Image 1 (spheres, rainbow, N blue to C red):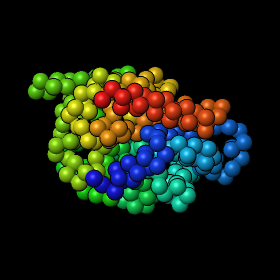
Image 2 (cartoon, rainbow, N blue to C red):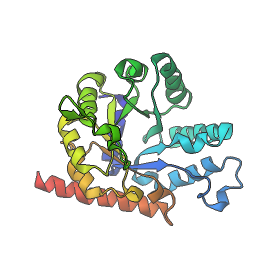
Image 3 (tube, rainbow, N blue to C red):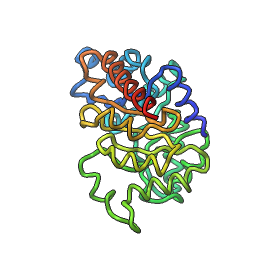
Image 4 (tube, rainbow, N blue to C red):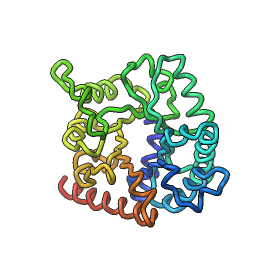
Length: 273
């Protein structure tokens, strides 16, 4: 088990939570009081972190919202990562970048995301294969989170294609579990909107944690996710909510409500085992 996955499990135990707060700071939607700051996205994210950290096992900044602002956005992202690292080092940080390229280019991404900005984990797509992702997978101190069954409505266009009798998403789960995870540092992205597929992926990858987007605004059901995806230790899920927490009237209450909803479902699953 990698350092990052151990960190996730310790944090999940410490705060009895599986909540990942997605930091998707749409500049058009953040409260006006932050817009006068020199770094408004950072100011907003810092406020969200302080409102919600008691309930969070992870924070997941989505690079797109920062990259859209050019050099200023990169500074805001770096400051957000630095703030988390310095003020809340016990909480996992995920760079939602969905990167992958040939190996030489990936080494640049590794240096940028893991070393320069100090993130614990990064989302990656598997299309280029293990050889290309080796620079990420070789980092035993970090986590590689591989897209498997994504939460979007069009996910099946390629992911449902049958490959040697099984859908592509199942092939990805099996390959990552059996061959890419030698360092115990892999996770899978499995959308909350596809609980039946999640159940099968849990069978294929029984010990691998899942990053689960799609609850809240995308309509994923928390109880269905927990029932389908919980691992044998009662953990194994980082259930992510972005808009449902960030733009709630009370972000702390929204994060607490999600934590409590998850824990009720965990208790139900535990009682049935």
